[in-house]
Length: 509
Ligand code: SF4
Image 1 (tube, rainbow, N blue to C red):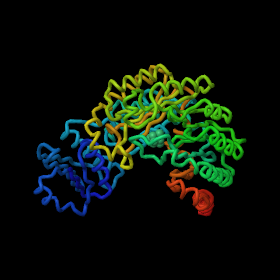
Image 2: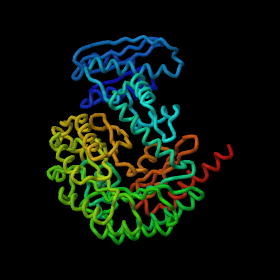
Image 3: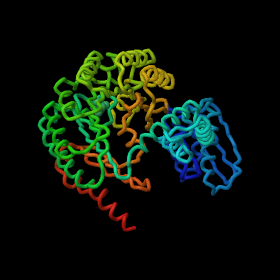
Image 4: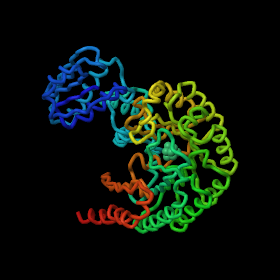
């Protein structure tokens, strides 16, 4: 175990996150400033301890040897700016990172950024510069932003260029929407054919809920009608039906849900209508025909890997042939915007596996590809089974695997268009979406960059109200399907409270 200690409460999480990022296999204990003075006792226990002591103009980082830290070492940096200035904390963060780089002999691609939306920072910087009429920036302006982030947050040049590239692309799309009066709708279907090993989402095996599905869809219908009423005067820009695996519903139930949506929102001109068909073991011709009938414009066929042994290991009840068949069937039925998701770092997979997956995907030529780095979440079976699989996890060089994915996407003419990071993510890297021109997942961008409100319905979903000044408030729903159905009226009223009343309150301010 590595203990972390710091004498500044507001930097506790930062120190913890940085040490964890450098020593990802170690158990790292978050700091507790109240215990800072117990340091001497800890040293006596021969544990690894990373201590950061910040005085006004000097910062000291010391490492006490144990299992992970090989030697005792101390770093000292002087800070020459006013401790009340806005840059002071950034400088401290930079020195903590520098000490870890020198001590460990490694650096992190994203430097000392710990947030999940690095591109938001880049976009904010571009907003302070003038673009041309097409929203493009000069090479000098891009270098200026990349260099600033490298200096301030130690972001590597190649990640900085990637983030800048994405930020400019996203900004053009975001600016083409009226985000003040527009919103997106998310519908959660919390059912799947089976539970994947790494799953941490709200998902239940559909076989166990067969007799509850119609009641669930009726609860969604109540939510749809209320959403239309609550969001009156606002324009619905995009809809995303996700889960779970929405296509685990029968074709009849899908028709029922989509017809209800059509009854309520039929007149809206949507910029994007996504249905996450998801798993190949749930996709059939009659279901795809239903999606076509209601004007779904974008679907996902998500293999996660194109290796049969891995599919079996992670609990998917289909093989790679089923993925290929589902994809080709969708193409034949006229779907011209198909996304595929893959995950890097699945148990047992090395770079040969990644290569096989990418080659198979190149054959299919999807319109977009989303590349995830495996995140081991507390709520997943994978976390529970870490002991069993531990030797097979983390064998992959995530950085190399991500670069292979970038090259594969590039060879298919797909450009990076959105990116986010998660806690517990393999290699401390990111999830990146690539797409061809005009096939960018618009909902993904609007949701991830938090520029417009997301009205979310369904068990385990979170509605996000984005106010004009950027302030965000959230309202979640029950994860349990039965509770969700029973308590639907109360949840609708909570959303009304968040959206209608809050807005009214604010207009009185
Ligand atoms: S398909 Fe997605 S939501 Fe369903 S079990 Fe697998 S990881 Fe979970």
